[in-house]
Structure formats: C-alpha cells, structure tokens
Length: 479
Ligand code: GLN
Image (tube, rainbow, N blue to C red; front, side, top):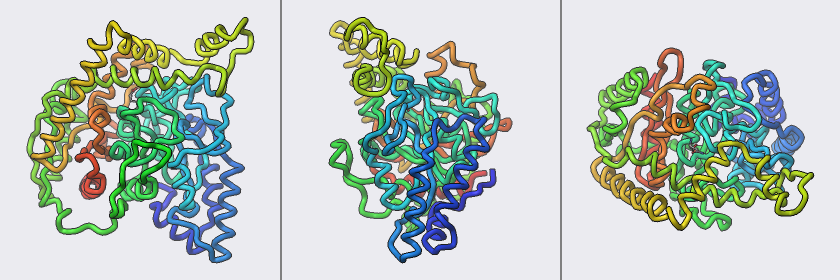
C-alpha cells in the first residue's frame, strides 16, 4: 500500500529544514486516525499533548535550536506503554481510568529526539493473545480484510502502520506479539535482543521474555527507531550494553555482502502444519536469497517443537506474579459495592480481569504451586536451557536462521475464540527467540490469496545490527 509518510529520517530532515511543520504532521496523523476509526486500531488519542509538543518543536526550529533525529515524527504506542498524562489500560477493564504518572524509558528516548506520540494502540488485554480479540474493548480489523484479525497482541500497532495512521508504531513481543501481527498485517516487526531496550514503564507480561520493538514500513525505519531506543537503563537492571556502532544501517561494508553470509532454513518450521500458501512464499524468498549469493542450508533445531509448551508454562507463571499488583486498590478500576476489603480485592479482580487473564493466572499459579513446580515449571526451564544450547549450536554453523513467522495467514475474526489451544498455535514459530533471548524480525514476503505473508529472520543474541542489515538486503529482493 502506498504511504502518505516519507521514510522516518527524511521526514525528520524536512522538519529540521523547515520544509515540513511538526504541527501539520500531527494534524495529518490525527485526521487519518479519525478517518479510519472503523478499523479499531486505536484506543485513545493524545491530542493536546501531541499538539503542544509539535508546536514547541516548530518554534525551536524557527529559533535555530536543535530538535533531534526524529523531529516532528508522529508515532503510536501500544497501550501497554506508559505515556505521561495519558490513559494507559493495556486494553484491560481493570486499568480503566489509570493515567500514567510517569512514562516509559522508550518513550522518553523517542521524545528526546523529537518524536511525538499521538495515540495508544489496541492490543489483547495485557498482551495476552494473538489476534486482539482478547482486548476488553474491541477487536482491531485486518487492513487487508476487515473480516480477519490483524494478529496480536500488537495488532493495533501493526494495523496502525499499514493503515498509515502514523509514521511508525511501538509494540511489545513476549512470545511473538510484534512479529506475528506484522506478518498478518503486512509490515516490518522487529523484536530486538532481550535487554537491548529498557522495559521500564511498560506493563509487564512475562519479565524474562518481554521486549520492546518497532513496527514500521521498512527495515531502515525499524533500525532508526531501535538506534534511538537502545541503551542501558538504571530503571531496568536487565538492560544490556548497546553496540557502539549505529544500529541505523546507513553504511554497509563488504563483510555484510550476502555472498559472505550463511543462512539456515529451520527444518522443523517447514513441515507439517504449514499452509501451502505460506510455504510457497518462504520457498520463493529462499530462492531469491540464494540467487543473490547467500549460502543457504537446512538446519535442525531439534527441541524447537517444544518451545510452545515451554512458553505456555513459563509465561503464565511469570505473568501470574506480575498481575498480582492489580488488586483494585492502587491502579484503575475498583468495585465500589464490596462489603469489606477482602471482597473488594476479589470483586475488583473478578470483574476487572478478562477471561484470558484469569485463565493464565490459574495456569501460572498451578505450575508454580509446590505440588506441581517440579513437574511443570522446573522441567520447562530445563527444556528452555536445552533450546538455548541448540540455538547456540545452530549459530555456530550459520549466521542467520530463517523461516515463516506463522503457519497460516490472518484468520477470520472469531475462528479461534472458543479454542484457546488453537489460538496458542498461532505462536508456534515465534516463541523460541523469546525463550532464547535472540533478536528476530518479520518482513513482508509477498501475499497468499490477498493476505500478507511474513518472512522471519533470526540472529544470535546481540547481533541486532547484522540482523537489520540482512533484513534490509532481503527486503530489497522480496515482493
Ligand atoms: N501470542 C502470545 C501469547 O498470547 C504472545 C503474546 C506476546 O508476545 N505478548 O502469549
């Protein structure tokens, strides 16, 4: 789809040069959000603050002051990011009425370079889901087919990018929630190495796999956004030292040439369960990369088939603890008719949490309970370690791994809502990098029956720059 937004660096350069006004860009974004409301991509706009920030930037430019690398660029954050003064619900009823008293480090970093957050995007409540159907408010529609889901949980962010609502969007990826909606909706979705971007000020899901990343129109945009956000942060002790080289991939050396790259296609992802339409596009992409000189072999990651089961033990375990803080007393919603404090907790949680959050709290507390801890949680952690070792072994043989992002293209709204296990299968090809912590990206790789298909590329932990370079090269070869 043709876009009304220039690439982010060009957009910012024109604002810096006074050829475009930040105020106009914000208005353009807000107008498009209003025009495309029927897609339900956005929960709330942040109009007053966005307009004020835009005005300040334009004034600074007139005065010749410095405005930053993302000057005037409007973006949309998934509604699990705290943005100063804005409603933050994570699409859950239990957070209704909560106004962020501070903001996420990621937002701080973007704002420090002049970017402007104009709205908060829809998601599956607390990021639990693969379709945005678990949002307590409404389901976002796929930009290519309104009867289908945009993917999830960052479905609102993915749809926002494809519908052109802003120049880019932010998402979170705990088990695939950036890459899967990017694949379903037809944009770039990038999950960086665990710890590269601070999680401070983002509603926690599973703390050992949560990462923050961009959803964008192309790989260069994603690289620039990550360049701005990546940093050690005293507010998140799991953050890592960033590379000294710029992640924005303007200069590429000979060593980056495709002819010097070894790529492994993940054998286990190409077999049973993969729809023919997706398979064809992944095979086409492989042919193109090979013709361009890449050395492509098949690689087996034997335990990868267990990643989904491991994820659906570890993730609920962690989130059951993280959701403990929503007790109806401190943030957002409180049930007012309870007879005493004990009931106030249970009534508020009972009414405030949706079905999926409750299901996961129950699974999580069960696998952590003394009678079942060894059988489930401990075993899952053992298999997780095995998986990490297998990925390390695979990356000794090849520089990158590739495969599909999802087994199918976007499914119909309602198709999986009565069968949570079927819904969980949408993540079967995305959860492994979250458990391992390595970076992975989804880039558009053509269409199947009118719906987008994504190609997934993975790299070793901390090889984010190399991953982005390869993704950019692949992007140029693909439809
Ligand atoms: N779809 C996965 C889940 O429901 C992943 C969610 C995510 O990455 N936030 O757990």
